Each structure stands twice: as structure tokens, then as C-alpha cells.
Image (cartoon, rainbow, N blue to C red; front, side):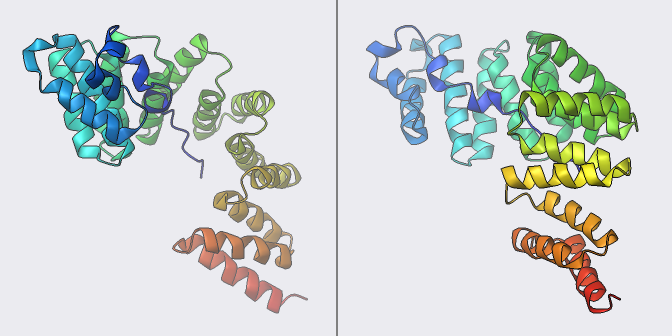
Length: 282
């Protein structure tokens, strides 16, 4: 199964300092509202919002957005949604609030609501690569592969070397069984960012499905070398080892995978199969 590559730029790259009025350095509450520390930011933004109409609608929307980001950083998802919603009511053109609310809803599994938020963010900012990528992911998960590909194509027309989008488009092509196009995207992704385990893993899946098992093992091994806790890569490599009756190698991979994914029934079954295969190997 392909690992899901979600762009979190709205929370990771969108720093609170970038969402602040020009006078913020002269105002203690605004300085706190723009702080990197989430608790400090929440306290500062709350003080700003307590001023009510003394702040402009746009600045109050910014304070709500900052507090939403900080609440999400602390795991307060519902409060984050409430803050982003308040920001949108005050300033419906606040792209960051739409996008970040979409991220939270996406993470909570509220697919249709997240899609609506990403779509509104894109209506306001059609060149938002992160929103295009994330909407494409949701569309792919809904089985809307052609719509997902349109989002990925648009994102890559704006940012051709975005390896996350390349991997995701490769996964969508794989869903359509268009192995040639998928391979082009995976090849480019691992060339541009050879330290990203996901690119190697997803290309490994393609090689496995193409019965290029030696190449698949190499890619799964590369993924594991970059991310030793990559349970899916360990499992997939073990399945190939089992087909080759290399049971000791399979058992080693599956034993580690079990530690990483103790509730995974597929891993449990594969480990039992490998142990049984070793026991009866001739």
C-alpha cells in the first residue's frame, strides 16, 4: 500500500511571524500572538481578540488564524477548527484559514469538508501547490483518479520539481495501471530527493507489480536504510524473500515489522507463514 504523502506547508512553512501586522513588534500582545511557542501564541492572540472592534477585521482574522495554528500544534483540533472558522467569518478571503482548516479536517477524516476547504483556498489562490496536492490525495482516496491527476498536473506545472507531488502522481498512475508514466514520476522523485524513503518504497511497489523483484528488493532495502522503522517496506521485502524461500531473511524483516506494527494482521500472518515455511523447508 502506498504511503500517503500529505503536504503540511500550511502549518509547517506558514510561521506565525508571517501572519502579523506591521506594528506587531511594538505591541506585546501581537508579539506574543506571533510567537513560535504555541502556549505563548494562544495567550497573546487571546489578548488581541479581547480588544474586539479596536482591531480591524483583517487583524482579528489573523489572530484567530495564528491561534488556530497553535491550537493544532497542541493537538486541540476542535479548537483549531473553531478558530479558523472565526477567521473565515471575519475575512472570507483568508486563504491560510481555509487551507489550514482543510488540513485539520483532512487529518480528522472529514473528507468532504476538507475537500470543500481546499477547493475554496484554491478559488482564492489557484496557484496554491499544497492545496492542489492535498485535494488530489483526497480525490484519489475517493477513487476519483482522473480528478486527482488534474490536481497533480496543475501543481507540477507550477512546481515541476516537487517530489511529494511527483510521488503522489506516480501513485495515481499506478492506480490506473499506467506503469510507464508512474515510473517516470518515481524515477524523477528519487533522483531529485534520494533521501526520501517514500519515493523508493513506492517505486519498489511498482517494480514488484511488474515482477521486477530484484529491483523491488533494492528499492525496499533503500527505503529501510533511510527509515529503519518503515514497516511497510520491511513487510514487502519479506514477502519477496518468502517467495524465494529465503525464510531467515523474511523472518528477520517480519519480526522487526511486528515490533513496529504489533496489531497488523497481515504482518502476523506473514510471520507465521515464514516460520512454518522454514520449519518445513526442504
